[in-house]
Image (cartoon, rainbow, N blue to C red):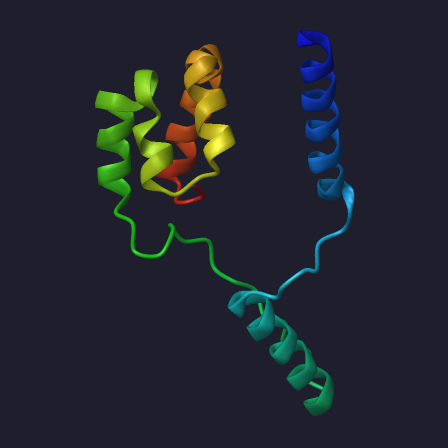
Length: 117
């Protein structure tokens, strides 16, 4: 009976995850829409100006708050990465590898100080 139940559970899990392999319809974000509209406008007006965004920090996030979080809570909790809304999987990997044995953490600090984070 237990084998049969485990077999049904295994088949159900395989069946339910099979839908994740199909392509998902892509949505265009506001930034991409602005970039497309700028490109179309440049083509229509025959100008050589190309929209190039300036490297800035994430939407009003203070650089020094991120550096303080990196210094005090960065190694054990990846607090600076959570503050800057980095992907959850990358934050968890950062925590599990102790900041990539320190290398990833130093790269994060350099990127924060140069406003490329």
